[in-house]
Amino acid sequence: MWSTLSVGPAAFIGYLSISTPSSYANSYPITTVLANQLRPYSSTVLPSFIPVVVSSHPPSSSSSTISIRHSSALTMSTPTTTTTTTNNNIDGKAIAAQIRSELRQTVSTLPTPPPGLAVLLVGSRRDSQTYVRMKKKACEEVGIASFGYEYPDTATEEEIVQKVLELNQDDRVHGILVQLPLPAHMDETRVLQAVDPSKDVDGLHPMNTAKLCSTGTHVGVDKLDWTKLQSIPFHIPCTPQGCIELLDRSGVELKGKNAAVIGRSNLVGLPVAMLLMHRDATVTIVHSKTVDAEQVVRNADVVVAAVGRAEMVKKDWIKPGAVVVDVGINSVDDPSSKKGYRLVGDVDYAAVKEVAGMITPVPGGVGPMTIAMLLRNTVNSSVRIAAAKGDKDEK
Ligand code: NAP
Image (cartoon, rainbow, N blue to C red; front, side):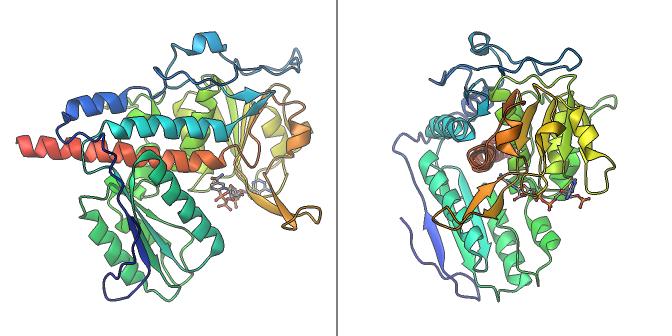
């Protein structure tokens, strides 16, 4: 049910939805919940997706290509094995739908209250409003309770920080997301730092960034299992996590491969480079000051483009057989379309597709994965918070 809320000193339109599937068990033992949660999501759920098709373009003898695990071997592999390619496309839409279905299943085994996500939207940007609506809908689909708080452009930074601090203490809320960008008069860093790192499902708190950037090479430091992203005990930013999940579920082996990441933002480029490194790829980060970016990219077995420049990556940048993940979302004029524009990625898709081993389209590639990973972070968060509370109660 959605209702209008008035919270705190400033009145604003809010929404509240608590969905409680009847299958929630109040007395589910947390150890069982954790075991369920940490189990690789699709190891037991085999999708009815089309088997992998490896590139029909034979690699040149001088090039190394990504090895793709055959679908028959995928049933046993971890963490996840949805192999969804039609020709050489990686179908992010289908993979994200599969993840949502797995999450719905997981959530149905959790005790009440269900995992809860709070989303703060400040201002009237149409794109932000659309993203928030999509997140709310996705929450409903998997049984996550969503709590929406909308503020006008004129809201103060203090108001938002106070709301975040209040949500940090709210037991119904396991994830807090501040929709970016915030209006220019607000200090984004201060607002993001107010979020409790354990509820920072966007993975943007400096504490979570620091953990992502730690390699655990020192004696006595527990090594994390980066092949099971859902087992990582802190929040990984959603879009980068979605990129790796797409590769995993498409059977792309990363170990020992050369990866080029184009872009070094905190939101995408930097975390995706860290994740690729944790998966034992050798990573080069390309940015606006890189000399001869094409040459760097041409050497890569895996290319992740997160630049924000329409169709910048051309066919002759790509080594035949390389896997290309296009994060970019750019709007270009298109008088032939109803809206007068269309969305394209950072990669010249039609041409690059001819040489790539696999490629994500835009739209329908990385985009749907971002929300799927947000949902997964929220579910993981609720399980971790419940486990931590259980430990505390026992003491
Ligand atoms: P950003 O913060 O603007 O960062 C862009 C990065 O690209 C910067 O590191 C910049 O380098 C680099 N760059 C700019 N021009 C370049 C050039 N000519 N050659 C090489 N590198 C260049 O953007 P972002 O937030 O990372 O987003 C990147 C794209 O991904 C955008 O299109 C965005 O809309 C999209 N995106 C999609 C999703 C999704 O869910 N699919 C999520 C987030 C973002 P410097 O650091 O040197 O300036």
